[in-house]
Length: 290
Image (cartoon, rainbow, N blue to C red; front, side, top):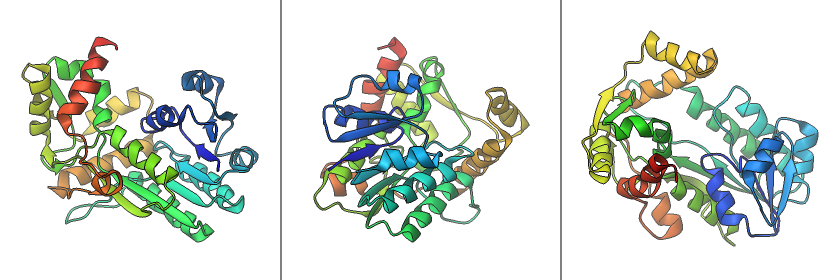
């Protein structure tokens, strides 16, 4: 058995890498020399190439039995994931564990590219005839708040997701479910909804961060307006991606209380990590530079 891990330095992929770096039957796909350096020492093979390049994709999946397929939200996401996934099926890969996203339901929600890209890729994998497909559908990542760690420590959690309640999930749980599905003799398979243990509003999330940090933290709502778009553009985010994020956050604002997923309990046999664990074990060390 050989397992191929894509995006091994990504927000979820890095935790798969930590879990699998000592295995000789794991291959890691990285795009650049900087990616190779970030990966560090692994026992298995490092394959340098791009999922979007047909020749690289064929080389990466050669001899592979199981694939973890992930890609950040980007203009080339559908092409890259579809290219690699279809090449994998054609090469005889039996099992694909795809990182997807939780869909939206309810009045006022609209199609958005972030979740829509995952749906398109998943459908193409099914059409290609993959024999065993697991689609991980997590709620919003707690680790997405890490870039704002300094602001949170100063007392402000600024975010545009609105008044609804969500099952914010620690990506370490997503990675653990992915590893379990990759290694299992008989995976759970199908669509696996993953969330934290409780649906929390952003003010409640800020309060829990504050309890761990031992200082008050308050949520500040960020309007989805021209200033919000301009701030993303100044960071180099393109118009197409800004539009996708606008629709995503609009859905967060309209959905209200999101349902919780049972994937962590169902696959791992334990409850998902609470926000307090993330804050103590990830957010606090990030503030100290550990």
